[in-house]
Image (cartoon, rainbow, N blue to C red; front, side, top):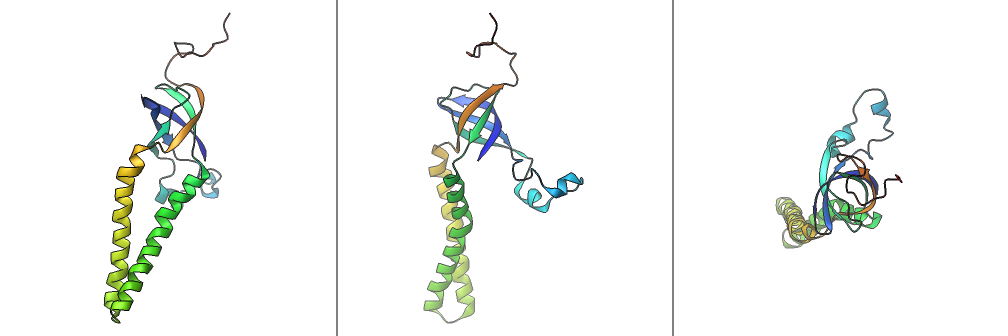
Length: 159
C-alpha cells in the first residue's frame, strides 16, 4: 500500500508523517454525484492521521514523501482485528458450552472471549507495535513548506 504523506517530525531514523486516508474512497461512484459513502464515513476516509515511518532516506520536516506498507502487514493486521475476535469468541463459547448446557453461560463465555481478545489487542498495540514504525518512507517527493533549494541537500539544477 503506497500513499503520499507530509513529514511532521523526525527522531533518529523514524519520522512522524501526516497521511490523508483517501485511497479507499478514490473512484467511489457516490462521491462523483456529490454524495457521501457510508463505508468512507465509517473508516474515516479523507480524514488525516499520523503514523510512524522508517526514515532511512533522511526526509526532513515539511518534506512530501511516499510511504509504503507491505501487503503482508496490512493482511496481518486485518486478521488480528477481524479474525482473532471471532476465533476467541467461538473459543469462549466452546469452553462455556463444555462447562454448562445453559445458553446464558455460553453467551457469557463468548463475551468473555471477545473481551479478552480486545484487551489483548490493546496491550499488543500499546507495547509491541508502538516500538516499530508502521510504514517506510520510499521516496522524497520534495519540500512542501520550505523554499526550493534551501539546504535540502538535493541538487537544484542551477549552474
